[in-house]
Image (cartoon, rainbow over all chains, first blue to last red; front, side):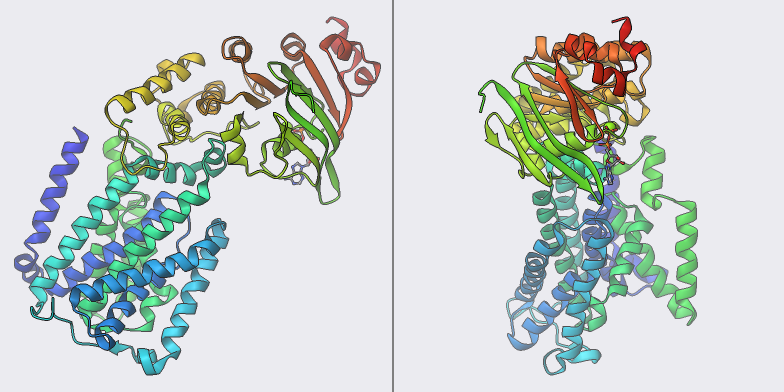
Length: 321
Length: 257
Ligand SMILES: Nc1ncnc2c1ncn2[C@@H]1O[C@H](COP(=O)(O)OP(=O)(O)O)[C@@H](O)[C@H]1O
Ligand SMILES: [Mg+2]
């Protein structure tokens, strides 16, 4: 029953999103902003897996996001790869980044995990900032959006559907992961890691895999973001950016499958609408955030689902087996 | 090394800053026995359990399990080898149901915890059946779908015991399994501990304060005091031991045993 309700709700949401090219003009939002919502949601999901589900303060996921964006940008500009190649190289760069950082992060917990994540992110930030010749430094680098297979240009509408397909694919994969025995074990690690170890499980191994999945997701989001705006800039890697991802996760609902989309939707669309009205947009957005957290202590979706289920957290409802 | 020894510690010490929480403690737990560790608060019982189970490693000394050294073996590997433990404060997944708690261990044991595909069909039934079996053993079947946070203290203890059995251990370490329980709940746990050996054939090492319980359950007792072994022996030896009487038990406590 519950699974069916979720399936129907999911189909409705995706159908509404698919009508984005027709609906976005109605709310005076550019279609590229809706694309931004979708690719940002991937980065928020990546934070959600580590922080919302596993309880690891992923305060540096912009590093993977930025690696994705720069990987796509650099490969498009200097290697002249096509669109698909740029997405793959961007995502792979983030996965590689994850492989390099994971051994250091693996054994850290709590605030130490968070601080080290920030520190590593800042290293990437400074590299992008300093290597002006290659990356354009502080100004960032623009590049023409590559063609698919060197032939087919991708306009804003096509790009939107590419982003939507990526989002739906990742959402299904994400849902599969968090509801699997592996994902349930991640939730158990968040609640009581010592007990998980005393069930004979090497929690480091679970966290290692979660880190790699997270880096890959953020990297894909970053690569698509770079290709969306045809631009890569150091602030994408910065810890402020990581903070926004965390904010969006909290806004939508930590430990919920769809919360990332909700958080990213409100943040990105909210920012777009408010910033065209006033230059104090950050103040209003901050106010909106505070209001949301007060009204929805578990995030918008987390709170609504908890009320529906009368269960403490949506992340913890498990399919039998 | 005595082959009938399930778990042995030789000269195990653990310091916290200047505090010698465990000081050169040796113990031998025979296969198939129920062995109790007693001692006043702060004697080092929990710390000793922590060094035995690899919660942290001792500063010196050796720990062996079935004759092989495990002194610095990662805690999760000890579980794979066949050890299980509970904690003084029940260590459970409070936000999950009783069934989900036990299922985590059952899956771990079955080697499917790392999978991305939930078990289905026959495999799933086997796992569910195992969960039911374990819950039946601790008499928690009726609370299966309740959140552990909603259970009584005693219920949480039983859930934790079921969880530590889910990995099919040969030896279980129980840290004060009866602390803070009502009389009726205590009886339930006593029955479970007896059954651990009689029905499941396990070796049990447990910490307990209640002397009535210790003397009726244990075949061997180790008395700890200020980190050191004060005495070791059978219940009647311990009950008759003058040093133990003076140092810890108080004459009155044992006079009517
Ligand atoms: N993690 C710790 N850090 C510092 N001191 C500790 C720690 N754990 C235990 N102790 C100290 O070690 C001594 C033994 O404690 P514990 O093993 O908990 O005793 P028991 O379980 O017999 O009541 C106590 O003095 C306690 O304060
Ligand atoms: Mg203790």
